[in-house]
Image (cartoon, rainbow, N blue to C red; front, side, top):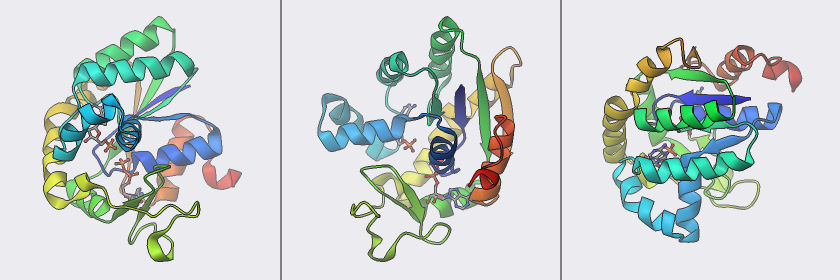
Length: 218
Ligand code: ADP
Ligand code: AMP
């Protein structure tokens, strides 16, 4: 099964991807997590991506598309989290999936900017696993150390200045994908109210993908 999560930064895509991976066995393919891992390991890709990411700009399409193409070779299905983010990325993914005869569903996370800012500014992450917490909505453990012993961090690009820029970038470069996927010849597009609690959003997504709801399986 292939699923694309579309929505602004801070909408809750990573949170929901991790739940779907854990409960329903989908494979989360987060381009943001992959880039951060490469940065931590000091690879060429990580060095290349660094300045774009710190500014809150998108990494160039050809670089990201090559990374995803390589990943897809080994994955029979994926939950795309943070990809595609531009129309050329979406067209490239369409080609790749079409070639493999793999239909997909797009989940659009619908949430206003005020809430997004609040979510991003209070976000704490485990830099090793990508697990996310929120100061108020999903409080991290005492001392801000995750259960695997890793100290949690706040991302550079979650600072208010970078958040403002990332939301501009989202509006200009990623929002056009709503119309792109709204075309019925492409994948099925399902809009989800992402202002709801983590549990409620999970239930709606699980239902849209034809899974038994998450709460019932826990
Ligand atoms: P994205 O992957 O779309 O950038 P995240 O999943 O990292 O977003 O979520 C951003 C922040 O909001 C995190 O701190 C997360 O804990 C919190 N969060 C995610 N979903 C919800 C929700 N439904 N209600 C409240 N907080 C949420
Ligand atoms: P995310 O973790 O999804 O918020 O992504 C963090 C940063 O990684 C973004 O602000 C971009 O700089 C970069 N990035 C992640 N995914 C993509 C993508 N699909 N295209 C371009 N840049 C990306």
